[in-house]
Length: 58
Image 1 (cartoon, rainbow, N blue to C red):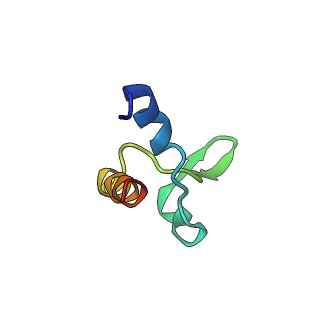
Image 2: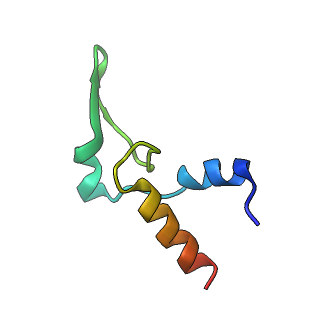
């Protein structure tokens, strides 16, 4: 059984593919950056996480 802490850290372990990283770019005064790991607030984040968990526990 996953604890809440494990659930939070598991989201951060799912990588965003390099060809999709341009979709989650953000700009600051110091430059333009992109995330390399999945964020909680992405539209399909929960579905992607559930698919990974289903695959893991099969």
